[in-house]
Image (cartoon, rainbow, N blue to C red; front, side, top):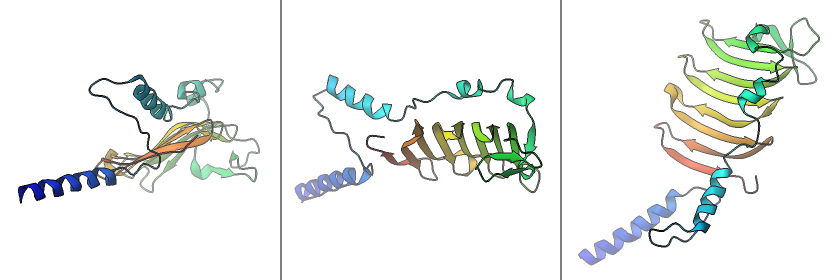
Length: 190
């Protein structure tokens, strides 16, 4: 009876391990004893490099502004409009907007903060839940997503990280409402 129970437990553990992997692209390598082979290190480094953006950092992006961002106009989202060309304009003006835009909830708390340069999202974009905790954070470089775009469940629990580089979607990681990683996706050749 104990032998049958051990075999069943082994099969169950094997199936459980297989079902935990939801990744669309698996990277396989051989592991020899306690030594890490050079090939294994290369595979691990290659997989992690898919999450590293080759784009400019937020600090480099912010250097595009000729003066500190706080010295540019800050407007309410209700004071802006999207033109037919897809650019953001301040109401009543025909030049694309450069500065900060703030959105507010009905109670006056900040719901959204975004920076724009020449009508395009440029720099950090941040959205908040009504309690003030972050809902979304992204970095744009002249209207193109750059680096990591992060979404949260309420109360600061991470929900999703999307990885962008060279204007292309490269993959994402998803977490459940308890903060446990539940899925990891990599775009092959991304």
